[in-house]
Image 1 (tube, rainbow, N blue to C red):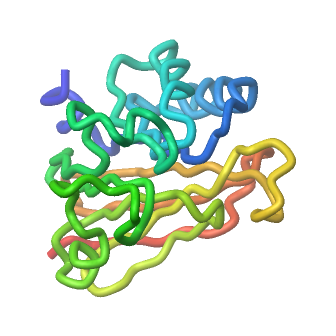
Image 2 (cartoon, one colour):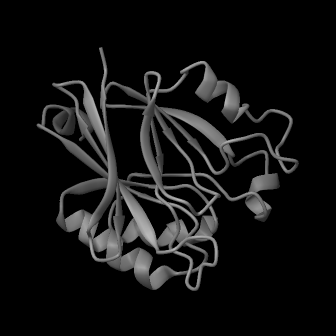
Length: 189
């Protein structure tokens, strides 16, 4: 299936973080993303089990736990990892820095960022959305879906669009109405 998708013009992934048990909005936005062409989903933690709902929309799901979840202390569940997708090297992490809760084998996210070890760096934790290019890397924080969030002015999610033939990727952050709040374009040379 992935080979057939790679021949397509573009691949769309829904990106979520810090859903904090807001399954209602998660499902609604995942359905919207799927209707727009999303074939896979990424969940960047808090709450790890929330991501189970995304299996209703795709069997292709990549996820990491949040810092204070029991799954974060489970060495059998990666807290951070790299994933090659459609010619791009993605790095998934909940936090964009080392944390006291990290396991000894966890990669240092700041080193990954500083050394441009990923084409696309996906993270959450702060609840503050971002899409930007730094060096040769697209950084995407989809923000938060936490109901009543006091850290974020509004609830947001992300879409990651990959164009394998053109070797480009676009990271977007949207509000709950589907309005694009920010986006960044990565051209891979």
